[in-house]
Amino acid sequence: MQKAIVIIPTYNEADNLPITIKKLAEVFEKIKDWQMQVLVVDDNSPDGTAQIVKKLQKKYPFLKLLLNLKKAGLGSAYLKGMDKAFNQLDADLVFEFDADLSHDPQKIPAMLKEIENGSDLVLGSRYVSGGSIPQNWALHRKFLSVFGNLFIRLVMWDFSIKDWTTGYRAIKKEVYQAVANELESERFFGYTFQIGFLHKTRKKKFKISEVAFAFKDREIGRSKIGPEYIKNTLLYIMKVRVQEILQSRLFKFALVGVIGALVQLSSLKLYRFLLPNFQYLFFSNYLISTILSIETAIISNFIINNFWTFSDRKLKKQSMLKKFLEFNLASGGSLLIQMAIAAIGENTLGLFGLFTLPIIAIKVDTGMIYAVAGILIGMFWNFFAYNTFIWKKKK
Ligand SMILES: Nc1nc2c(ncn2[C@@H]2O[C@H](COP(=O)(O)OP(=O)(O)O)[C@@H](O)[C@H]2O)c(=O)[nH]1
Ligand SMILES: [Mg+2]
Image: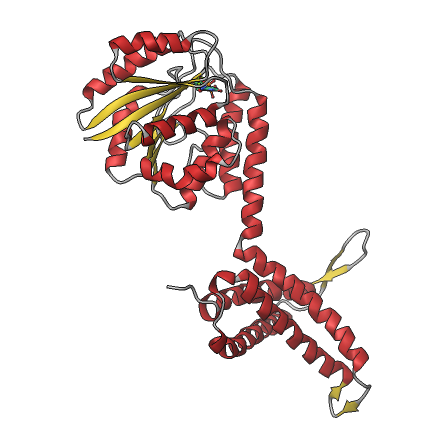
């Protein structure tokens, strides 16, 4: 039989714990397919929570205690608890669960079902249909919770998860093993632990699902989540996303494009200076310099893309020349796209002035709009061509 351990981090929860453990025991009675245990991770609470646990252990054999000598925060308590649950107590699954009865223990069987049906991590969720936050919460708390979650979804650009900050979760051993190392190297407070854990789980492509529950306000004791949690959460998600964007292929590609434009402009200047002035038919110093500078930019883009943007798909020496010719074709394609859009724009909508930008006094006309559209669509084509023809995904 598989074993699931409900981890309860506690700090001053002496009055809540007896009720919470009793309610959990009632739910465990009904669970036949899993061996259920509880692991309380107490940070040496001054109110004697640990003594209460020791007393309760006489009545409830499924109850375990992990005592930390000093208060080190929720994330640290969970990491220590999970380490013990998976590595010493032989758990296959853990639950994250609050001591204050905010998390409805009656939902545990439904969350186990989700695991049995193939999920790797199950969220007890307040923001899927059927879930809720307390009616009696003050307006600012409701606002913070609802918009906080919306904001996280937006920044993470991930709308499949509805409750990023929930502290009610079921987590399989495989997930813990895949993300715990990375988490231990970061300092986590409250919600950042939860968001960070979930974010890493998602990046590793584990299956995540949500089970609705009604979050109940704690009746005894005080919440330990203060304003510093909000600040840390904001800093954390911003940091994670900025790093992700900077490391993303699309960002590198765009930056290489900007570098290419600079290379083209500066090498144009250089070639015009180096070449003698001449005019033969329509060949001139300017035309030849322009062609050379375009090719210079193409070469530098090809090299930087190969060693940076697509460094994970670096080309082999023997295919380099063929790929370089294809790269030239792709670049020619985006040039054609730009010219086509300019021609179509001029012949359909036409060329006319739109407005003048204040301060810098640049007149914007439709010609500039066609150029910008051409460059963007041309870039889109380039990115597509690089990905599918030149730096193909390795199988
Ligand atoms: N071990 C440990 N538990 C903590 C710490 N901070 C909070 N907790 C526990 O984590 C759970 C959730 O905390 P709570 O204050 O209710 O947060 P809220 O529900 O978001 O307001 C409760 O069981 C707390 O006792 C901590 O620093 N160490
Ligand atoms: Mg609480």
